[in-house]
Amino acid sequence: MGALLQQAQAMQEQLMSAQAELAGTTVDGTVGGGLVTATVSGTGELVGVQVRAGSFDPDDPDSLADLGDLVVAAYRDAKSRADALAQEKLGPMAGGLGALGGPGGADPGAPGLPGGFGV
Image (cartoon, rainbow, N blue to C red; front, side):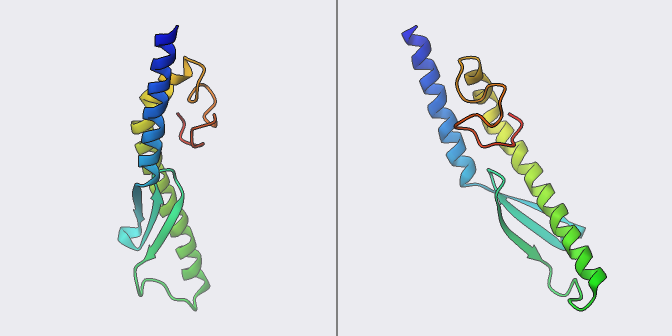
């Protein structure tokens, strides 16, 4: 029983290390041939948006609506990439801990795990 507990503790430490690594990583999502780029952290937090200069007319409501749509699309692209990265880094470890009753079980919002990764 002690060996199982040690194994669970080691897996939890690996999971926490991977989470910290994700938090320090950024991922870009780009749409419109590079018109808009959104940058998110590895945990999915939006940390920046870049818009190609001269691409939108600030006096045209349709142009601004298009800009808004492209920002949303760029964020979704970046978030999808961040989710894939998180699944790659956390998936095997989180699934293993779930069998031991720790973070990463059937509840993706379990304590110790960022929510929304589908882990």
